[in-house]
Image (cartoon, rainbow, N blue to C red; front, side, top):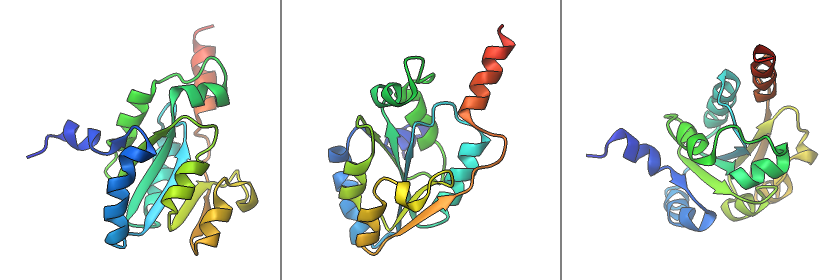
Length: 167
């Protein structure tokens, strides 16, 4: 019998290549694949709300997680605050998350183009034409959804509160 930490670790993939076998299984089972991505640097209620709504759109939720190097390139030299091992483990610990795939690129276009999920999800701060991979998913008869964020919760606001508390 698998222990809880084993279950969590079995959901984490270091690359697309590592995930290919699981992807084939899910596609053969006709699972409805939902894909989203992000840095998920400091987990908060807004992330839980967003990811649970994304998971409700299909049968398997796959998260493309920016690696430490990718996060640093996107967010600046002080980020990530939490390393990729911590971030991937926290995401994989959520019961409605089925896979977390680390990626080093600036965007998840390679993941999306290879996975071709049934549903591609991003936050409502993006319009469909701004969502990386939307064109590819739509061309494959998939859907692209924008989910509203839970008001008042963001990693940036938490970071600002921490800095203010220590001044």
